[in-house]
Every structure is written in C-alpha cells, then in structure tokens.
Image (tube, rainbow, N blue to C red; front, side, top):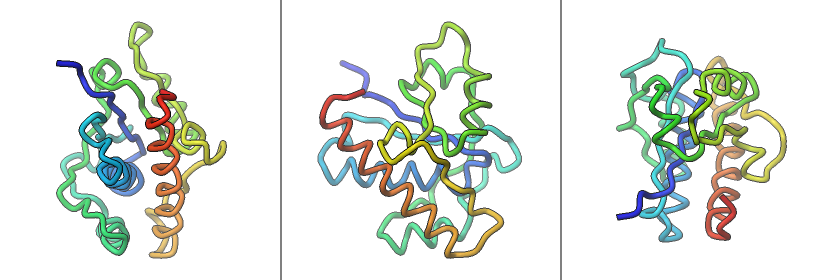
Length: 159
C-alpha cells in the first residue's frame, strides 16, 4: 500500500494556528474527496502546551465555520516528523527558521512557509494568542485561504 502524502502544520504552541490549519485543511480535503490521500497533523516548536486542547477561542472560531478542532491535543515537533511527513508548513517566518534549524540533513521533508507554499503570499499568519476574537477570525481567514490553495495545488499534482 502506498503511503499517503503527509503534511504537518507547525506553529509555536500548537494551540492556535497549527491546529486550526490542520482542521481547516482536513475539512477542505475531505470536501473534495482528496482527504483519504493526504494525512494532515500539527505540532509545536515549543513544549509549553504539550497535551493541551486548542485555545478555546480557536475552537470557537473554527466551530463558527463548521470545523471542530476540540479533540486535537498539542504536541511538540519531533525528530521523526522530518522523516514521517513530506511537507512541514510553518505559520510564520520565525517558526520556519526554527523548524529548518531542527531538520536533520538527511531528512526528506520540505519545510516551507504556510501562506507562501499555498500561493497566498510571502507573509506570516499572525499569532492571535494575545489578541481577541477578531484576531482569531483574521488568522482563520488567512488559514482558510491557504487551505484552499493547498487543496488546489494537491489536486493539480504540484507537490
């Protein structure tokens, strides 16, 4: 059996942006019947929230858009993720830099900026953690645009 293409979403705490990105991308891929061919997960560069559910504001924001991320639990980026995933998509340039530093030289995974790889532009998804519901909504909209771009790119075979 052929292993599905695999994407890991990465942010600092794995409680706001990356679990939202995981949930939104899964929803977009499932809606296009591509979900069974792509494995999506998320992780953090830090370890302060390991084992925690997503931030309640992220859960609430995603639910407003029909996506339930409440069952996800934060985990830290692991050495084996660079072998187990084909693509690691980072929420911002700081996370991109940290993730590239951790990547073993022999690992096959690509490490890219989420919005850039998705065709949305070379910009960051702002971290809404210290913000309000509007900041979570703003981050969600950027992530949703990225998820649509990723789904399109995968359907076109550009990965």
